[in-house]
Image: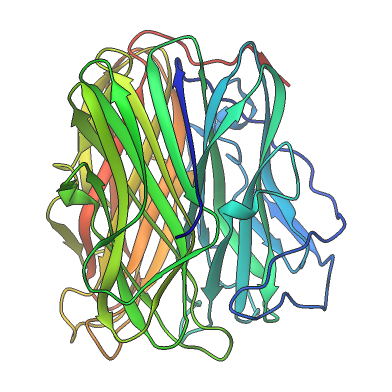
Length: 469
């Protein structure tokens, strides 16, 4: 049995802030070997660039972009394009916050990855870090990006974790490097969301991280990791789980899902294909999130996986499960899109909602989580590239853009996860939220399974930390 770290705490109000930092070359950090492959010896420091413009973007105005220099926003807002050839872990974005009391932070990083202009295939490597630019080895994520007949394969990546914090100043990092091959690692709109919860209220959390790899050849969904909470009253739980999926011996498609006690969370099903390539195989970031009502009493929250098709061994690195419980009235929490049920399709280049809803917010920050499975509607369908983003009150947030390619294959087509998180500062009132999508390129119909949008907001409080560093 693998060793699982669990962490639980009673906590309170949300607070968050960002400050982008300058990025400098640093000594290469040791990266553990994966599937017997080692990091590239060439280009140990590499070249890293940060751009405020995105070569794939439509350059639409973003009314929330100014939050990048404000007192409450996601870390990384305003960085539209980040590239590196370095084998050293380099800070992509970071945030420093000063807390007046102990508590915990929920760290959630996401980005779109693609091929840089006139570049070639690569494998990228990521970690989260708390007060360390070496990062936490229990948050490792690998993603392969390839050239194709168009502008290259685009994918999403996700990594998250709950971290306990003391009073005082702490710095949180989203780190990245090139793990193998010769292409330039290319990220679009990298975002690190940092949510702080002090110990002074009845909000609770638990975290289950499996530091290492988890494997199965079973087609029955099996528990990866879990954690339990004894809840004093009814409320909601925000559930987030992710991992790095990799190739071991043969191609496979993995299905992941969340569960509460003995009940599967229906809208949380996600599928991902892993294939062989000329290196150590395709690596993908897998993720799923849901918001669920819960009763009082003790509940166990689970992250499950199984092989959906193929003959290969499912291999997940560092699977992470984060659970945050909000008692009734602590926050306004809404799950849009009927909890991720059904599917959404589009063959046009204009945005339409995958999931949408309205809710009352206080004068402060809202946290949004959008996720889904993407694939072909039928095995005979043609390839497509989709573009997905959040919108608030009918205005799209271009700095949350996520691109994703889906191709035909020998089975039912390539399945991948769409994943994005972000923050926005809003005045008190009723606001409409949507996770939207459109076809960006290709001739196929964009098809999304069980899209989910989760929105969390304070009903009355302004979300600001004790101090901003």
